[in-house]
Length: 258
Image 1 (cartoon, rainbow, N blue to C red):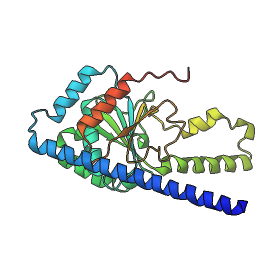
Image 2: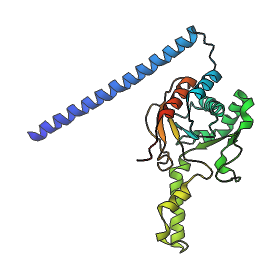
Image 3: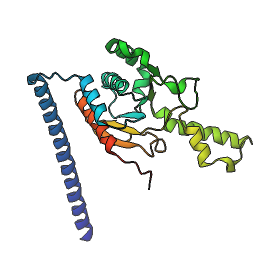
Image 4: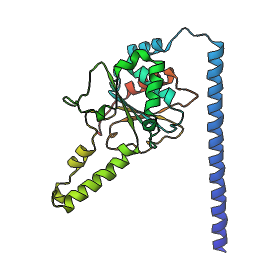
């Protein structure tokens, strides 16, 4: 009798969870559709004289700090090339020296040529301000790569996170088995040094571009002091949404665990 009661309770709870999940998904879909329609109507009816450059300049006048290293965590990567082009342009205007795009499947890495061609087509005036994948460059001085007036754009994937852990583990195991490394020499400092991306500071701010609040596999020790914020996802990224998050980051006080 009790077994039957437990089965009925489990079935009821399962049904409630399915219903809650459905209602939440419906709410997110309706909310997203309403916001998209509102923005489309606002752009259609309201002729604004404020350009993207004006918005960026106004933002710079209101904030006292910008991230030195910004990471865009891509939840959906098959629609991101045009948005990446726009974000890179904004970062150049805001003088953010390092920007990384992280997607687990390596979509941007596979389409790096397309991204560069699209950027050259949309913003040919800014091409000379970009150093692509600076971590692959050999010229490093005091941990800073390239010229201060340039922006360092990195395309990262699982290979640079979990894949790097696997490769490091294999190399350490091989070194220990061959007698070239004492197991006691494997410390937190050694692992951190090996996994650190050379010449690139840890991210100050990470913007999650997607519907789910998730890091999507980006390394936790690279982001131990990183502020994570959600970047609203519409048909295209809005400069106002982007600068709004920068203003929110400007108000954050990092206490580093204190």
